[in-house]
Length: 216
Image (cartoon, rainbow, N blue to C red):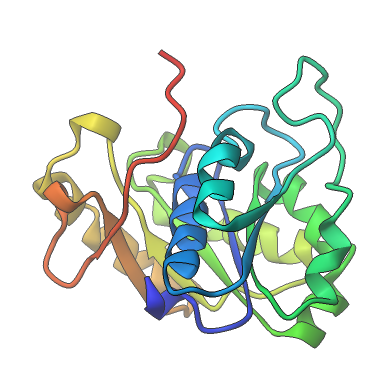
């Protein structure tokens, strides 16, 4: 995971359901394992499901400071920014930002884009070939640009996190390579990493754990 942690602040964004939260939590846990002070910001103000707030206990036990929306994990569904969000820009700890809601959710980044620029950040677009809306790399490229416009920030690379959940095979991961390569070409962005669970990991890939909450 070290190759993705180049700046003090790492921002993870992309289409809903592409695996952003799982990657964000894995990155935060990797920082903690290295002994670094770090926090994970749940900036998903749109989608109440599959959010990093579900991993609060695990994060705290690992030494990660979770920064969560006020109403996370309650029956109240009101979009709100976490109260401690601003602390990201005035501390020396590493931060992973889990952005949700496609371009709509990315507007939360735009409010503080100048602070991100001042602190230094890496923003990655998570691509999952098996999500219907972005299976076409041209559609994925359009969404990527929409997120950049909404956030007023720029992506530095693409993470290929193509998977079918528990049904994924290594062949499924490898079948996404051509489409992801085309997305990189269309956006003029490098492939930052191919992420997969260890049992499906292709050569040169980055292993991640499955920490996403299961609904069923």
